[in-house]
Length: 164
Ligand SMILES: Cc1cc2nc3c(=O)[nH]c(=O)nc-3n(C[C@H](O)[C@H](O)[C@H](O)COP(=O)(O)O)c2cc1C
Image (cartoon, rainbow, N blue to C red; front, top):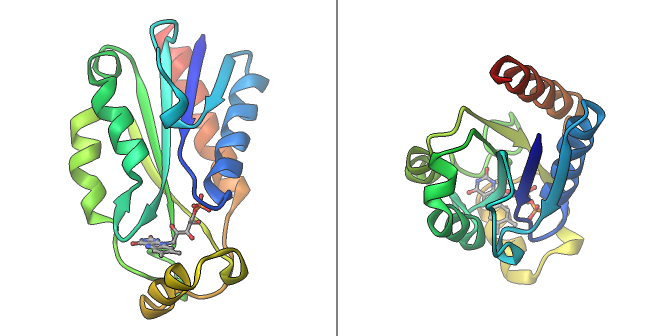
């Protein structure tokens, strides 16, 4: 199948999670394009979608939200999986729960949604971002679990196979 993996990222952590998902889908024989949502102008050639965004201040990025609005029709007529990358839910990395992504997910009705742990690397951030993250109680570190990302990708492969 031809799949678009559209993942937003401000500091690269979500790009890398997206690349792992894309590779797993390719390993299973799918033809996958990975792009930033804001760079996508046409989705008519795709059979399925994987959308991702980091969570900032409890929200998906505006670019990712815009994507779901711009291509709402196509997303509703094809299978969609969604993933978020953030620090909520980590014992020592909590900022706040990403409740505000709920409406976005409801609007695209994904087959599945998962939140993966992300990365907080203060040296890569602006002073403002650093202060906000620290005020939210974020712990420094790379908490990404690529085995969990691969396991979720495998579940997409299985679900796509069941549809064919
Ligand atoms: C200013 C700021 C705000 C953040 N807000 C949240 C949040 O509300 N919820 C959350 O789970 N993670 C939050 N995070 C953590 C990011 O989602 C995490 O660092 C993620 O890995 C960033 O991905 P990226 O490198 O792809 O942009 C925040 C991080 C920063 C720097």
